[in-house]
Amino acid sequence: MSQLSRAAGRAFLGGLAAGGTIAAISAVRRSKWSKDLDRVNHRGDTVSLAEGPGVTVGATVAAVAGADSPAYAAAAAATGLATGALGLYDDLADARGERAKGFKGHLAALRRGRVSAGLVKILGISATGLASAALLDAVSDRRPERRWARLWNIGVGGGVVAGAANLINLFDLRPGRALKVVSALATPLSRPAGPKAPNTARSGANTALAVSASAAVAMSDDLEGRTMLGDCGANALGALLGLSYIARTGPVGRHVALAGIAALIAASERVSFTQVIADTPVLRELDEMGRNKA
Image (cartoon, rainbow, N blue to C red):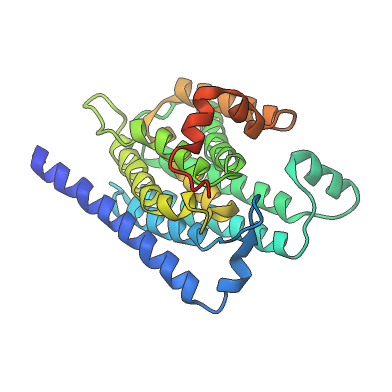
């Protein structure tokens, strides 16, 4: 494939993700369920969670279109749609007064004999991550030969997908913050795959490109405080980034990523990311860039 053809293909995927996101957000906001997705943010303003289903649909459709194999297309579809649906389920549970927050909160609810919506989401996203990693393993030219090593590699890959979904959600506390994190992570992952990359790397790069384009068109309204990702959008974009990453790397890279993600999620149970950002001048400036301060 010529360089011009590759550029045209990437432009098409970016346009598909952007157009799909805009169309889906518009459709959700016109639907009879739009009021169910209204929330009050940290400033007391009413914002719409329509952005979540919108970026889920837009990014997933383009990721599927950019897949090089039916197995990767299935993995992208499952990753985006299932994690988005589970996140939306948790968003709607919040509206019904769900109180369990954080992993400790979900475990506390379970000890009281109640399965929280958040725990259902965690288990569902974990299963989705494992399924997606298994689909990638089926077509990968870098899979370990020994059965136990393959199963371990799938488990670590599934953990990266599920962990990334959760991690992005932890940043969705201020306008534009989660989308900025998504964009920063998607940029290196969307670069064209080199000749020595795994055979799934091109599909992974296209997935990151889809996520980046979807995040870009949602950024303005998010920064203005008119819409927000919610669990639906944050989980879907995070999981798709996780899928992109494991498609582009091998066992060592997967282990490094999982360790880093696990450390950040564990830290979030004790440390406020918002406070850390506020106390760090560079991070504070980046966080507030483009945000409506009125």
